[in-house]
Image (cartoon, rainbow, N blue to C red; front, side):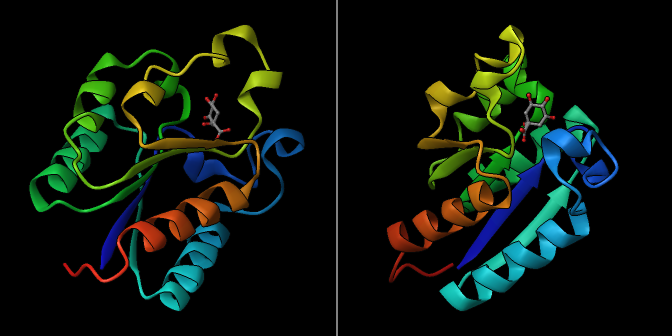
Length: 147
Ligand code: DQA
């Protein structure tokens, strides 16, 4: 079963970007970790990152059209993009919103996500484990399904 692991704006700069907040491991390291666990869980993780909101909308439409589950880190779009929320709402497979940092312990504007209300669940503040736990949940929920 295929799963889309989608990361939004600035997440390609992991390792370089505010390491005190996001850690020293790179986006490539994140992809490696996700693909390794996905393989163990019998999932095929298609990991993608973009700084372009229109591209992210297209990927969510693709997930909706194909019925593919999604792990989504919307980055800063979480806090204001109604367009992304409307696209996420169309995804019928589980859609798990993830954040590396504990957004609730940071600036006020990060405390609210416009995506959460249309996500199956949200995992926040666990670093790479936020993504890995989301993959475990998707594997558990889609067990026996094929795509
Ligand atoms: C983030 C949290 C967002 O507030 C921030 O804009 C990001 C990353 C996280 O993974 O912790 O870009 O989504």
